Image (tube, rainbow over all chains, first blue to last red; front, side, top):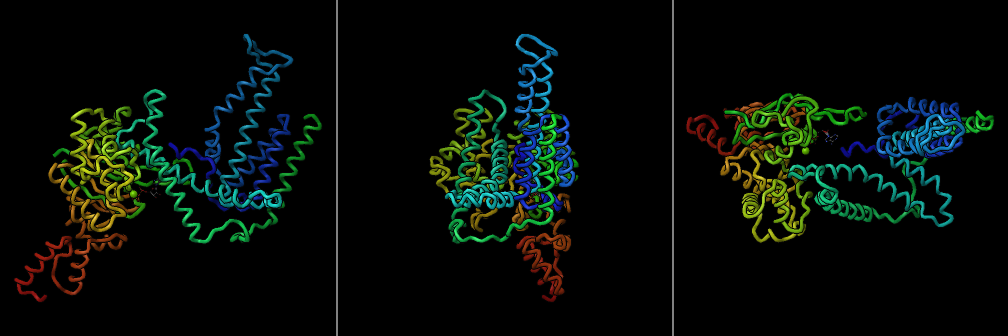
Length: 268
Length: 288
Ligand SMILES: Nc1ncnc2c1ncn2[C@@H]1O[C@H](COP(=O)(O)OP(=O)(O)O)[C@@H](O)[C@H]1O
Ligand SMILES: [Mg+2]
């Protein structure tokens, strides 16, 4: 059940999409998001969807896995769609009932908003599906390296992030195990009112917290045993290096963004 | 005799529709008789834990059936909790599931979920604590003050307190020192003998299984490799070894003796049986 949460899950592979430098992928996602917010016509959205489809195809990530990523935000998508659909003022009413109006602009806005959120989430998920969390934080650390000059603790933040990412699957697995163990003793998480349901979480939360603290303690000891002392003078095992494919991919991303902006300028 | 538990062509596939899809249990069938002590053995990753989580309905089969007293446990999915009270499952490393302020309260969690109260509840808790070897003076302590082995006994008591018909244990002695192992196994053995209870023990220690089980189920990469009484299974020791599994130490000694021309039965798996064989040989005047 908890396994359905795919947030930040990595599907290993050996496609060009996997081999790209993580910095490239982060930059591409940023370009993609900017382009999404510039898009203002069905042609532009069509182009964005096509771009994503090509990337998905290259990465060989199953479409099903990608769509499953939308499940947790389904409510937000529907909510935004409905809100835009019924409450956008427009020139022409297609349908009206009391305070609810469906206008031509409303219909358009709703479709765009829903498309925008869906593409945004799928695009970001495509990055996390094809990039291991370690590579991702590594890329982020390198991209933000310049901020060190302003005393931003970039290395420490990146380390905290990679530890957190590293332990998400562990904690999910642990929660699953503890839930199973308590269910085996007849714990019931489904029935009862809100208060009873909250009380039913105690047998899960107590062991979970204890184990999380134990793990944190063990990890801290293990890091100290290996003389970890922060980012000062620390070198990388895997030095990130831009390759030809990275330049190609970035050019491709820039072209798409330029196209979307051009489409907007021509009012398409 | 009517089987108490039947597993029919059980298959379980994890991660259906993802790149991680794989079957952890495939087409496994076996029966358990009332009062029997069944041992399940296999390598790490052979699917033991996945298999036994089907016995009390924690996992739902991808294909196949689990029958308790001849009835499919998923006949009424809403009543699956009743099945969990009848088939008590002690997880691997159960000490991590403890959560209450006192040992007594923690053991009470299961029977209270069953709806038991008052003297009956108190009696069930104390009896379970006794069977699992939890000392009386520990009952009012916090479970987090106890040692690893003691915590594990508390977790065992927590399941025994539900008075299940079938007790399923997933590697109960993993990570304990030899004395702790033997003590805990002695408790489980006594529970089996004195209560006439049905016990299913998962282990990766051949010696532990050989010493306790009436019947053995050997799993290898999601399939049943063999099943039968210990004598039958250990008669195929060569096969076990070539499958990368262990055989009991005594069987290993017997095999070595045979290899040197001593005519002993290589299917023996207890020290007493080997002693008997050797004495018989000596009396028979065979070269020894
Ligand atoms: N919750 C799960 N999700 C996905 N795969 C799992 C899960 N639990 C176990 N597996 C996989 O199923 C196989 C069998 O595991 P398990 O039943 O735990 O074996 P054993 O108890 O014999 O070590 C292993 O390959 C394991 O990786
Ligand atoms: Mg296991």
